[in-house]
Image (cartoon, rainbow, N blue to C red):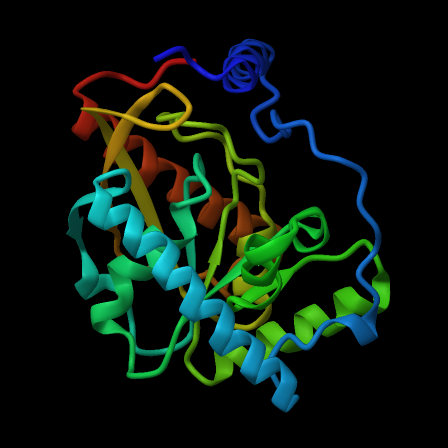
Length: 272
């Protein structure tokens, strides 16, 4: 089966961006998007309509991804470190290389989530607006927390995050910022997730997904990846330090954990 030319272009940009140190830039060519306005989003599902749409989105999302798992086109081979996921509200940081990553992390932590709880996912503005059909429903309502370039919407985002963490929810943030298709190396982390953790005194749970090629080929012509997901000991923001130093320490600690996980699993030193 021939490889998808668009995916080959993405891989070419990944190689170029890695070489020039543009680790947090998008390699996918996204269409223009529009601002999310405050009245367009209900971050904590206060409205009945939001609750119904969320239930519908999660139902279709589960059907979609579980069918892939059943067919063998989405493989979660192992999960480790669930003892590190607290019962309190927490920020989960994870590397990001596929649209399936959200569901992979949710499915991994589901055994330790209270009944009826889901994983909340921070997404970019374009992902909220640019899709159609069932994917649009999932991006808008499957417990997603879109960022916005609108200041008032962003204030509403932070208020929602505070509420969710206070009631014990888990929020997934990709601190590498951009999704790089099938990229196995940890990339330098942006501080946003750690600033949120500091602001609301939430622990950070580093998660790292490693992969192996399987013999199966996906619809784009690439080997289906089997996932190995591991959760590591919580990182807390040191309140005895100046805020900027405490955040930098947490970022560095998270990155170090990821690098160690990468080197242990793949048996090689991390180089770019």
